[in-house]
Length: 454
Image 1 (cartoon, rainbow, N blue to C red):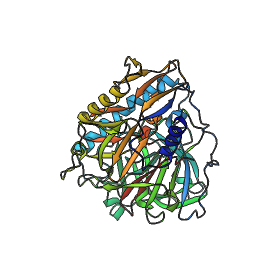
Image 2 (spheres, one colour):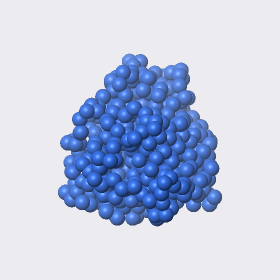
Image 3 (cartoon, rainbow, N blue to C red):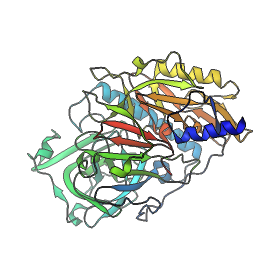
Image 4 (tube, one colour):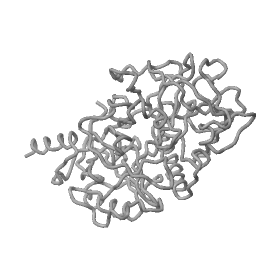
């Protein structure tokens, strides 16, 4: 019977069409690793990520979590900082959804993101780290001359030394999308983020280089007045659904598809990665329809119908709690920059209580941060824990145990990586770990493929 259970557990990670009879899985109780620090002096070419066969219609890049650019920080302090960023970001997303602004950049965006990649800006390309964020729509970098700039790992971009830098003129169709005005016939942009970061500067078009693939005429904000908590990154590559995002600008070239896979940084030596083009879609992907909020076009909304624990649907959670109404209120978004999944408060309370009732053999630990449920799992190398399944419209996603119970300190304290909030729900990047998350604009759908980082 034990071997049969092991086989069932193995295949539950390989396929998302799962049996609800699977009640428990194994959580490995590991030690908290020291953060891996990247070198900012090398132009990494992502040698661990295979290059797609046709670089004109596909590209792939390695991703790095922002903690890898944080030096002299303990794992415990990084966790606390992550929770603080998370609280700010989720609150700002809620405010933006509730206080819609028609301008693509003058609204209140939601934070500075969690993952970075390295790319070249200009001709010849000057390489820098850039934040990738599915909750933002603008591509920008800090530029010389700089009225005010925050510290970054690489030299500031000098547009005068690029042969392909072109300022966007007032009255052009691109400038008119911003509705922000001009200065000396040059189009301006302004982005404010929920954590207090901002960037102000001139809009331009420029060539971006991803490994050996160049993408020309990308609308790029050249920031001359910037304040940020970007931990060494030069700027941001917006991957939202808005017109000025990188994904929208390059949609025709890359088939309007991209995907990423985020690894569990505490347990995997595999790199996180992002892909654009047809190679972004795995054959094992199951899809849920992409929904549209009539009030705001940035976020990726999906339908969530319920949650199962221990093979049974949680009572007290209804599809209505996750509905996006006709006025654009509520709903569920998939977000790369939020860490912990946020659920509407009634759904979270029912979910947490159901999990606790079925995990009574796990020793509780006192809370010490922004989350409310912790466990003391010291003394053993592995523990059996109840399964958790997220039921999206058309796709049931079985989460690995490490996607909802995460190690937070050297004492082997684990937290339940969910929280409650009002208004809308957010599927965070911890719950996405290990899956290749596919964004298919042409099919108007979002997909999940397990073991997508291998």
